[in-house]
Length: 536
Image 1 (cartoon, rainbow, N blue to C red):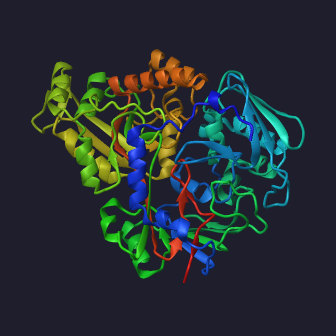
Image 2: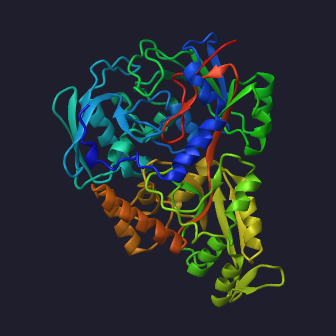
Image 3: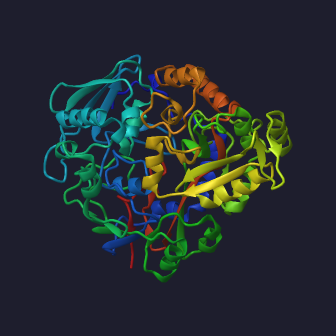
């Protein structure tokens, strides 16, 4: 491999707190701990993995829904991979890669043995078709278009060699190339309409292929015959170890956990934190990974009159007790959020003092801003109640805890729980006061994707020229120290002006019966099932 690592913003420089958190998670994840000792074979041909919701879209280039990505990772490979423990970028579909001095051009050499499940070969022209089509899709592929910010062209040298060029340095691009968002699909898939790609699923080069999808019922994937180009981060080579993985959609937590206990399911997604201790026995394996990127937060639309009031946003930030929220969720592996990035994200800088729970200071801010306490316990100003709405499609328990806390200082937080489709629909229209969610990405560029007003994927709607300039500059800064300084500034501004009210650092927590092994996570805390196997 030829890569000028010294010129890349290395994700190996993780903060001490993040490394400690990862060590804790590894210790409580008995399934992961046992994988190295498990034989690389499976006596069970079919694995049943119960998921918590309908994936809605099967193409990982077009979605950011965790459930969808957990399935899509098995079907779509990427040019490079990222070690989740060290942050190092390593080869995958590309056997080597290098950058120019300012990170505005990236040259790749592909493996010569990769094919898609339709039998076509992976070539430089196919990669070019992928990247060109993602730019053309624009808001239909909002995350992908932001990972490719400043994209100029993919210049094909020959079938195996090509260079991706940007108009300015794109420091986060290599990390983006390791994600499913920039995963490589067949040329035929790039020519299809987005709705077809979502429902039929893409043709990928992965170790599994889509067999069937029945909305709100199940997804089935089957082993890809002849697969033999796994990333070096995987445990084995060759084909996947099981023939079929079934993903029944089981929305009720109790039904998923009950099915795991009865043996109906081999693996379940999102074991409720409250059940964590119940399944910490020799009969089960737990798999935990802290989400990187932006923590579960309230993210504002400051074009709304009440939300535009900085005193209100700051009061919400100071009136949120993150320690209590962490305890109420019942998680032994999660932790309170203290910044605009999670502590497991490279570039994290704690804002613990600025985010400390201080209801007295929150009430003083609201008093000074003219929000007077009403007889019903809700503040009002000029006849307007201090009521705001948070739109979300998960983590209702976290929001309900926040709702109770904010009511103590006179803020009425209404919850609007919607489907994932309606959530992203709200983002598209801007019809919300606050979004309640987090954005997972191991690179701190997640802040630009979420907050830059030039981003097609923006969730936070804010008017702040200084923040906008910093977010754009950090993405175009190749020097590690200089980029870190900009990322520090961005975190400080976001918290100081309460452009985000962090609530909880989310942990992906799944469970399996003890006979299952080989479940691992990628750097974005999405499951990798290439090595999964099970004994009878």
